[in-house]
Length: 157
Image (cartoon, rainbow, N blue to C red; front, top):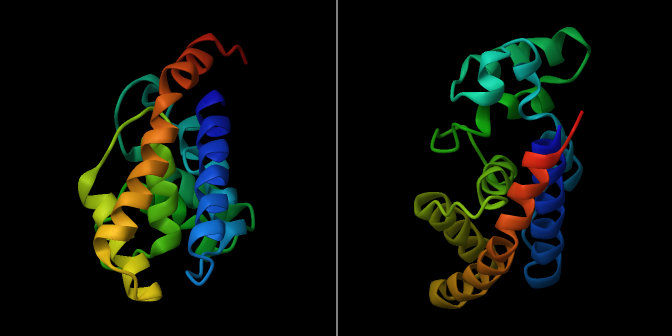
């Protein structure tokens, strides 16, 4: 639960930053925030993946959401948040993936480059300019990673 709260809060921060700096980049904010909260829902069915790495929960979460009436375009995030390199992903998927990594200070250069390149295509801004702005955002988010990790460690359900 703490992990989902943290990913949601970081996703909100990223989306607010995008709105401020690059409002012309279209992002389905409601979908991103929804997914930030439920991207790991399959872990309720695959308990061993709560504390250990694994990907079985992704498919389980997808099926769980579909069975409870969630539309496929939203349920798919349970799969794509960890599979952002696939060709069927988009900026919404990448935002969730980014929030799921950067909340704990983890930088993923290929993911960040994908997002920077997308912003450049949509805004016609120079890559170096977008990169520097985006890097500042991610550094600022990363500064609080220890606090967020402590929150997750001390969170009681």
